[in-house]
Image 1: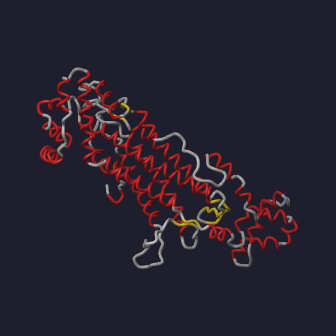
Image 2: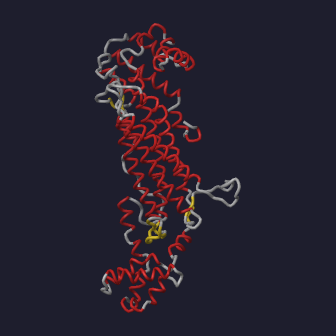
Image 3: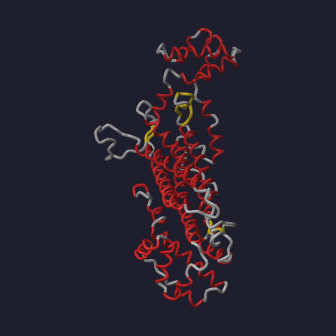
Length: 454
């Protein structure tokens, strides 16, 4: 993990110290389990529980033996004397590594989901604040029809909630342990010992395994992170597009002493949003690698191991990092409502063209093709600078004869575009009147996975 992009809590979960301690926890719980079935004398447990981790000795033995878990076991055995012979009894390396990894991923997911909840809360607050902040909606990057900034942000509330549900489901699948021996048959370690270890770590027991926990679980977990990253990238891209100089409707926060460019003092670049976009792409790349890791040979090969040492810690770290950036951006979003109105009125209300056409069809009884072409011609004149669209419509003799002044006024009102906002907000559990941050999140959280397994 690159420290620049590794939140301290995630870095601690995947540190070498944490990894080795996780392995030791599995080993000691396994010894306890063996004691309950009578294979290790109770008297040996006291000595085993004094086991220590010596990273330097482990590194020395690994250089000699070429096997990290074997070196770990040998180094720990040296610290407990004669009782060390019971350490790693009946286990294979993956029993230790995969079980400890399940807990690491579960712990990381709890942090990620917590921070996703903070982003969701920030989005809810801004969506409620800007429920009726009218702006132009865009399709293909081109002005379409009016929308509100609140509805635009409410879409992201919904997306983040779905991403959290996916993460919770994937976490439940990956938060498992296994102690099934060399090919998954429990020939060298009974299910009772496996169950004791998993209970002690708050993990579910994988129902069936090869020598390893099946990697579709890990692939689903990384894909859930990648999808969350894609949601954050869409959010960041939206802010980037709104921050373009010619648009100027919103921008990410920019501190008083911040520099946007080493050369141009006027620059205020969307650098946080651009970082999110770049790192989201990296996480998607990790998802591809995680899926490649699913098809291992028979009961296990080691092709997944080296890749996972990179992609699993990094995917968790990068996801949490861009979550925190996203919350910072949303909470500190600078909104220019006046510029939004200005852009909405570009070409004299041209974005109300559908409303005029519809009125000609439904109220005046014009054929749709006639109405479409008549309105289209007026929009072309407005774009050419012959006048504002609203004025051109009112000056058109045929349209003025077909529609009343009141009807034309309704065509150019934003009321129709905001009339259903409250219903959308009710569906999402958001406030329909201006107030503070809104409704509680749905009860589908990674923390529940951890509690349920404990």
